[in-house]
Length: 321
Image (cartoon, rainbow, N blue to C red):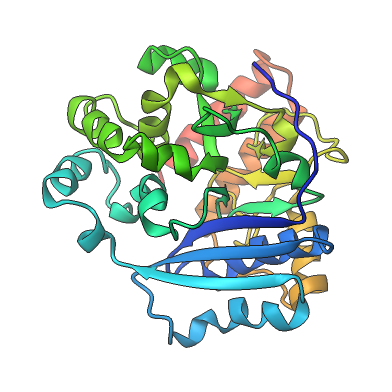
């Protein structure tokens, strides 16, 4: 079900969660919101997991207030180990199938507890989201009796079947009704699903949010969370307001082959005087894998012999990792 949205307010509350690895990309997300919503006061809450406010690496975030006069940044340091109850931490640990993942991936579930109680709603944005236009039409949507608004996940068919749900949203962009979450004690529902469904949970807090709000999910157009993956998609993004780099191919990593990478790097140069490429880089094998994937997805017909050959080559290259 899609609902209409309309602009009425001139102030928005936004939020992102970051750790030491995502400070610079988060600053790009913040800057893109401010630049494309210059006539709106942007109250941006940055939840810092395991980062002290005095950390010098935060300077790239704080200096944005000099460039964008419509920006108010509020830093909120948290420690996920202190925030999440020990028994829930133990259950979450069983869902963290990758050694690279930590408790911090579940912090979205705690925004109603982390953010000030004076804030009734917030536009949550992952740090790999780039704003390309006015977000007021989304922010001012009617949330009466609705826990959150989101966009259908690009792989929703697979996930709804996996979890036996009626719908499945991508949680990288959410308009969250914080008052609803607090009034209904939603955090307890999150805990219940983490406890009861931990064997089903593969996509961490995204799965938990979808399991919790299955029958009350309301979706808006994918222009509010256009999810890029290295698969055939509509390359026309003129109407997109929020562009989301959801795969491993983050635009700030060397070797990235995303057709939208230039949009991200051009924004870095223009708004932050930063080239946009971090020190991390793809290995030679990883770069070859991504280039083969890109060539296969975009240039070879589905179910063709040539595509099968490339897929076989990909399997051999991946075995070298």
